[in-house]
Length: 394
Image 1 (cartoon, helix red, strand yellow):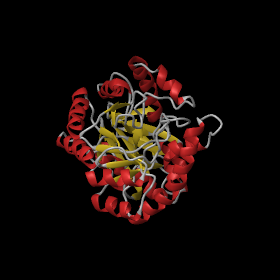
Image 2: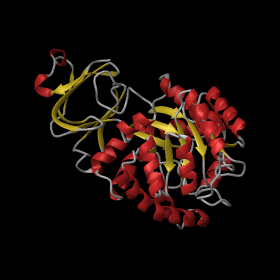
Image 3: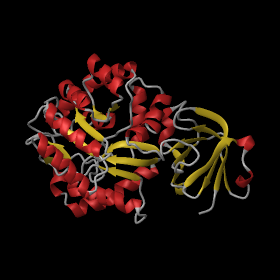
Image 4: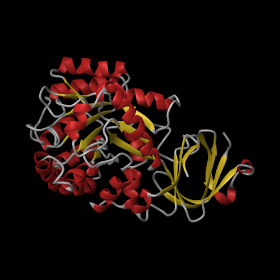
């Protein structure tokens, strides 16, 4: 693989912005980062990418996707037709969509029978193209809880059973664990804010997952369920729609990440004529609470990541740039949104080699024609995307 030098570029390194920088890619990793005027001699003779007037960023990280689903309006029908083989094929196609959007790492939070675990393995082994994939296998939900009627979750009750389920998903190859702590918008017959697991059940799942070094995501919409998951020690709250002052303080103190999944809300409420009425009704209630919670969490200093929930109705894969734009629309600065979509995501997922542009890390990079830290809309139009030093777009 030839070396590449990106010259005289504005650099967003995952935390800060610097002008007139140079980045040298050697193989799959970043070999050097610094002022372009002080570029090392080995930058000569490489493939040079002119960076003047452009901005280089780490590859985006989408911390909440469902690769096996397409984002169709007929969500129930899509789930009913799904088989493990179809899930794997669909996930393969959807994975490539993330790369085209500048997303070089995703976390899959629930899919049929471990299909997305296998797709992640195939990507890691170079069999197919796609972003780096952390996959939770099947999510854990209570009997009759959110997701019990679809293939992305397994029903588990009791602390001992939770430990066993975590072990079984890890044995299957899960590199993350998801617990469903409340009801949800897309499951009929259960309120979105319904509190599911007991404190003992959540503590058992989190303790077991952390013993194996796996981060834990909690689907949680209602305040009681969110607080219980935070106190249990989960690493991130997905959706996190009802944030009270107490919850904001606890999340800040414990370093719990918030993944607001605004794309999922908007996909449902913006298409009321095509999404089932029960989901639209719950979605509208969730959106109203979410706007207030978003501001409260930001003001409290709660850490945020980018998570789209891609695969839910009208929420296609590769929508991380749209999620960042929604986060800004709801009050976040473009700089904070870009941090959420890069370095914060890497920290949450415990990935030391991605999320920042630094010497020694993987060359997962995106080149933009302008600066997304000044105008977040720029993130929707990447000029060039590298993953592990290989160009996948541009």
